[in-house]
View 1 (tube, rainbow, N blue to C red):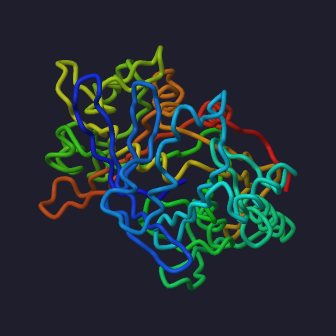
View 2: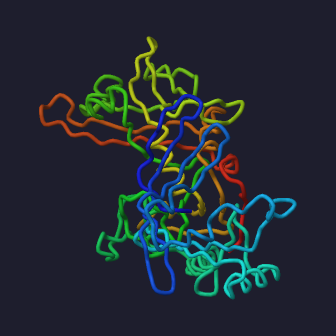
Length: 389
């Protein structure tokens, strides 16, 4: 829910953590103050995420109202004491915070309206919708308009927002994004008002396409990797393909997918320097994705995800028909992703290639993708199911 920066692993034995900086600002009636020390800390052994350092170095933040309540003044069950902490997220990735003390008008109004069931709870937070509607309702309304529009010609948006035709036959996702006004970008952010959009027409769906940051691949790049582990397929092209499941050797590539540092029984990370790896028969690491790097891509984009089915025109110009219901996933964490991978449900299904391989001017296309059967998607979310639109 919070836009964080890169994830840093801090190794301290049993107290090892992951930390991620926030661009955090306190706001009040007459001031705004940057809390430079604010960060999220993930304690993987619990697992638990804490917001930390949000008062460090601040002179105008509401320090006096954020001190621990004296033991003798606490409620018998340590329940809510009336203080309300509001968070807001800007388009620039800032986290804004405002504290309403227990006796304030704002806190009293919130408590009353919340007691009337006005606000939907999401995990430990209550969602205060902007524009009078929440993003889920707006998304479903837009999808309904698209469905009612019938067959849609294959299009995409340029980086300047211009609608352009898309002639290839793999445009179902591009067309849906264009119809929703989503401009392509390389950022690890959700596509539409906090929702990651995924269009699908088959039984499997691509979850993420992160490039390895370790092993031979990380050190020497995709071209050297494909030359070593890929196979010729004619037309002077080398391909690195094949389904890779955890602890199952792929006979085509000679590599085995491994998850190092995660306990699949307890479903917790036990080594913050752990990684998803492709290993040779001798245990050499051919490619690796560090947990910290994968965590950024997964948590940022998949906190809320919409999987929209479609049909495609096979004969004439490419076009797409988007169907109801969509599958909506809400609430996830990286441990769910790793657990599904250890169960063999999330697979590594690459499609990297080196073209004109015998030429000194050979070209390369990297495609490292993790995929999953649509019927198993519910394993990744706290709340998941079909929703008509």
